Length: 233
Length: 134
Image (cartoon, rainbow over all chains, first blue to last red):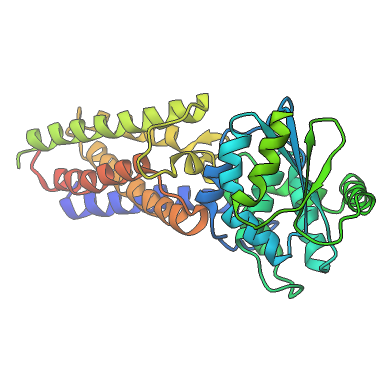
């Protein structure tokens, strides 16, 4: 075979091999059934914060942790976003990763429509124990209240970035009766606890009565005294 | 360079690539954590883009490196063309995977990049083999 023909054969085969692989990967991951994906910010920070920490639905940390912290928050409330971005990682490293505290997120939707969309997605991901990954990434990408910023594309991008999350299954569960029930239960719990602003925190021994904590700031130091006190009890 | 020299280069580069791909396949299948200076290896390794129809992409890479190494054993036109085609195709696929890491997953995997580097060197080597007199 002549040299030129050899190059042509190799080039054609290369296009078939490379193009085929790329097409296969694109089609299996971005098929027409998936909405377009927006790449979210903060993926590595969130992955690092949550790495190897067990989750059960909306609870983060070991179920055997002696102290439980309940966070009452709305995915759209800017202060909740500040708390998540500036303090959560510290609290997680110091108290959750060490098995001392588990955090339960009690989601609220008083800000408006995007709150419910966001919370439904997180609760749906909670069925695959990825609630906190979705929630934290939503806070990292928080938009202006009720502008429709919780788009399917953002949720798809968030889903793509989370190891072990079946995004299709998450989307399928978003409007499910189970998720609706969890939303209602969280709203009722917040009402019964008398929560009227967010973020509000309640601390107590796991599976015992919780006390609402007045926090002095949204820094980790605003909450740490209450956690330390509960751990000493 | 003589074909003999190029064949040695093909074997050496493919062996390095196969080593990296074998490590990535092993950690992917067993779920063990991997040494990672770039910090994003596990995100990349557990992303949806790390498998193609249930086969780890790293395992495809391993198979390709073994096949490319095997082409060094022969001087036939078709085998040399196959080596160049696999190196070029793998290079294109690797380039797409870099795009996936940067634009879609937002994490970089140093081992994947090492493999891309090896492919970048294998492309000219296998192409030169097409030119060299057998």
